[in-house]
Image (cartoon, rainbow, N blue to C red; front, side):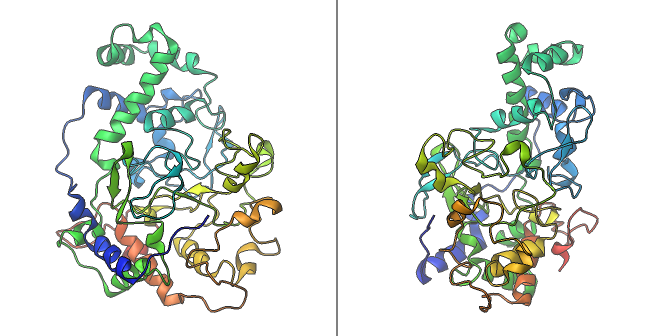
Length: 422
């Protein structure tokens, strides 16, 4: 998949957006306001293990509010199920900054004029159209909340007086008359909570305050931001754009640090994940969890194998694992991988072949056209050295919400890898 590279004049424009993206967007968040009854219901459900068949797991178990709605542990994939020991197949993403995600489109248009391509949708493979639909998926997954079916969960919720009363107050007296409507209402409540509660899209990072002229960057952070934006070197902004990109409902977004498009990066296989129930591989857009774009349906769908959505980099420094399979446990390693993937392949793939998380016939899908992958070959000189990588990590640390603008610092007790403090 080839995306248009931008030239010097356009790079200057993107650099301006990197400095002023949030100010241009005009979405500086005001003080928290009261949630609607639907969102308050969603907030209660989000934290309640009653949604799980085991009675021990809530949405917050994996999407920890104390860690920007991402896991606080370092498991590559989270554990759930009836006994709490079944492992999932993909790393759990943060739930922050999901309100701007566009609808999935096999040929999503990008406002920057680059080539249309698969983009949008929720989950790593974009298979769910909105937060409500995505929120329902874990409830029935055998390795997550493990409810047998929607009826089992609805019956349990209906049997709890405090929830029965709140559901009828919010959705109407007949909400439990049909299982599908009541089950869907759970998703709608969880969606309302995530849309309305500012903690899911706070825009309170050091970077955000910097764009408003209220904070400064260290020299390392400033150098990292310049490299992040440089189309001839790191080129991070080509995918993790802080400028204008596609948005929800056909609108445009800005300041999201993702363009919402799908790419195959050749991330090394994570041998701690058991892929046997899924045919031996996780191939993103073309399966196994998404089923409408498999090669079995149409041979041309093979071009989509190995493609996963570009995640937001907001709050990335607080994460403990990186990429769809949680293969890396240090942010610095994840950044270094981009610059040396094909230069020192044995570092990343050991004795295995390159791109070993895809079947051999599909490894041609891996991106070689975009910087920093362009012209990488064994023994070549990386376009970024060790200090450059440290600087980029330092800049990524400025994207974490919760910056104390009065004291001009982060609380160092906040979970993460320490990147913010460099």
